[in-house]
Image (cartoon, rainbow over all chains, first blue to last red; front, side, top):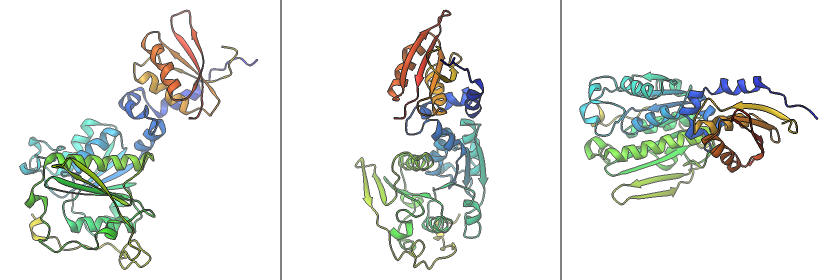
Length: 282
Length: 81
């Protein structure tokens, strides 16, 4: 009979992977069967880019930072405005006038000093988007205008990057997830941006802050699921939320075999910019 | 303890609930199916909760040894769910 051998070195391997502080910080994740130690390690190694530090990006950034996503990029050209604070919960009154990316970075690091935050204090355009998204595993679209949404879609499809699309207005929100090789892209569903002035922006139409919170959190959840492999993503499905009716719905989304960017018949080979409606220009 | 071929040990006396179970779970994760982990734990909350949580994960609890100093060693065989 073999005597027990204490292989301390083997456990040192574990303790090097997770400090006791990390085990405590992430204990509620590690306990979950669907995430566990492996899933938490994946989160800690993951790189997520959030485009837009506004109503959607704010809650998503906070939850992804708290979840321990190792590298978070945040892109936004704007500065914090008093009118943002009704929903953009990552910024505070004291941040008014500061670049949103700096305010967002400070809030994320205050929650979780272990993570790395990269800031992009610039507009995302066809010129810079491919180089920026290339370094990330998952992209989160938290923008508030159609030209940006189509640009992010096209660039992610062309660079083969998964991303979460979302939009909010008034009491409603929607989101879907694109994964390369699976399911439709945003352009399969919405071929072109709507004509100028056909759809109001949330600046003109208004939006309830908590709706941004709900949808932004769902985007963070999609990122966590993509990274850890837990559950089913919103690929090939559009999730809609109607706050007034307290209703969630999922609508199946087919792929468009003639899609201008993700099909074999592709006519878009490089990202390009649509003209931004005048009201979106500050 | 000699009747078990213990692959690894983990000491969870330096942490409190729920990190006790989390630390044991991380140690089990590193083992191969069928390998055996000895978990060193304190009396009280750990010995009340950790064996149950380990069982709920689907692992096989082989023995709970009560040591002279009041601590316990829980012998667990890793079983994939």
